[in-house]
Length: 248
Ligand code: NAP
Image 1 (cartoon, rainbow, N blue to C red):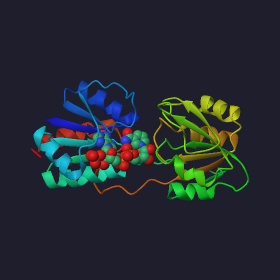
Image 2: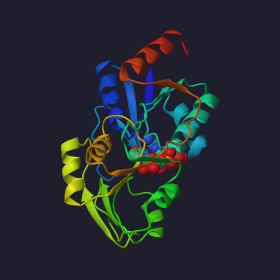
Image 3: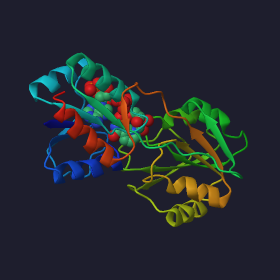
Image 4: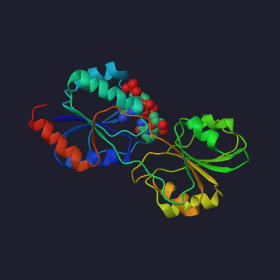
């Protein structure tokens, strides 16, 4: 068995350790979105495969027998490519999927479908916004330049940011609720914009916003392909052994 583990999440790193402990040969793949990726206990490759065609070629060249998709819930392109390439190549695929966060009674929570809609949902009057969505799509919030934006990024920005009124904190999760409450108080945050990533590594900001009674604007996950899904590490390991025993 030789597994390609598509990573980028806290759970992907946990899976890498579990696969290593189980003695399963694994290659861990990073998109290359950060200059300081977390070290892994298995061999790592970095960067895109070159679409479906490139991934199909990679699966064949590297004699990959199974693919575990543990990418971020918003990395839909990678998941779609993995689904198509694995289907074409007859390589079994499972996606690790953590449950989405849900609003609780009393939450000031507004669900939206897109980043643009999240920007539209912000008030017109100047507010102080924790824009907890990574760096890829922050430029869309330039449409509301009246707000002060707090960004939390894994790497320090290399050039000017596309927002006029912005503070940056460089930090890597997982985060704690008490720390996120302190961060939001220090920056006098009134609204939190987040992607509904689910899981435990980034939920602190949701818990903190809830505790402080802040407005939450939650961007829903994109649709993902209809592949087999595992909610935890044990299910992934069982699935690997089961499909290997069946000779698929
Ligand atoms: P994406 O839109 O699904 O992927 C775009 C391309 O990046 C893929 O087609 C693939 O390139 C490459 N790629 C993505 N994940 C890869 C992996 N694990 N190994 C090798 N190549 C990979 O994903 P994205 O552009 O990274 O991010 C989309 C959303 O996910 C953003 O909202 C971002 O904030 C969020 N997100 C992503 C990560 C992450 O680690 N990727 C982490 C946190 C948040 P080829 O087509 O060339 O193969």
